[in-house]
Length: 520
Image (cartoon, rainbow, N blue to C red; front, side, top):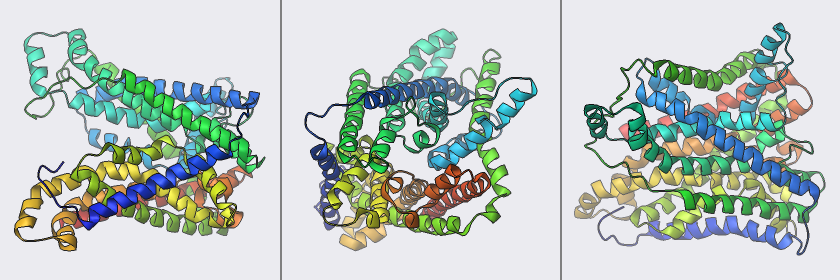
């Protein structure tokens, strides 16, 4: 936060205007959904089953992701080995990986005809059934284990090296270290990690669409989609949308009650000390945790690349057309996300405002499918929502990226203003010239990273576009899902590899461009 008085500029005023527009764009559809939900209507047996299944799969996914991440993060914090930095970097790949692509990779390894099922068949065991509850949980762990590992790894590396040295000099046992250092860090970090993963799994749509379904494996998101797309029962879709929002709100309140502040303390910012790095005890368990996690995360990607390389050149023309449509949509969505996030971040960097932070976090709490349903209800009386499917999808994708962009931009803008603000004042720089010469050169890196993230997430999105698009408007993820549904496996594999390459290329281009410009 800037520590001196600053005048309100046009950029700050624009930030307030944009924040109000974002709040309206999220809450407006939510109100439309609430008004459409029939007063006094009751949830049916299938709806209650979907709610129970949603809570069960999200709870199992969050608990297992957090629980499995702890030994992996602990091992990475304690060990130094060749390729460690690359492995930690690769662990971030599933976050920008299109969901439907990752599901395809999981099917190649864990499906009925996957590598593991084939290996089981050699010893006379039945193949793995990946569809249903265990499939959803497996896919959610694949996506969220790296996120949890990164969160816990930061916690372990934040333990001051001075305290670790003091513990070693006092002869602390592993149990003492766990009690005095590791448990307080886990107690402070785990509730937040659990909440984020629980919310992601609750609002996960593409995973439920591809691996769920059926009366016993339908989530609330999938039930909204079915009520909207197949039954066109807007009242039931609206009611389920409110249920979805209520689940996220209650989860957030419960976790806030059990969260505790971090009490590890501060040090002299020396490199973290791996106090058990040279002990033989625990070395085998650390190696096992790292190896299993690396195989679990990287094998589906390897399977996807191997199968897709043989099929990508033979994909139908519709795949290439959908790819061009997705590219345009992703770039437009990223540009819109930056245009929304930058003035909001500038205003939030100037002074912390709880209301603005809540607006920035709204897009995580409200499902894209609920926003899409509300947008359809608002547009239906005045326009054909199907003809506006692509612009609505781009807008929703941009708002879904806002929290990540804000988190990247706010610290960078605060630092730029703190380090360059006085010099800019002394030179009389204001308005656009201040932004161009004093601020932008120092935020290009985070800006490029955030734009790349927004483009990659939009490129792989299979949410709103699946809700009310026509076949001629299909994006690449939707085209890939259609190919999978019509059992054109080879074409789907080629489309999956194309989608993977385009998503990674977009992220790399924006991120690299930002860092290069920042270094120039």
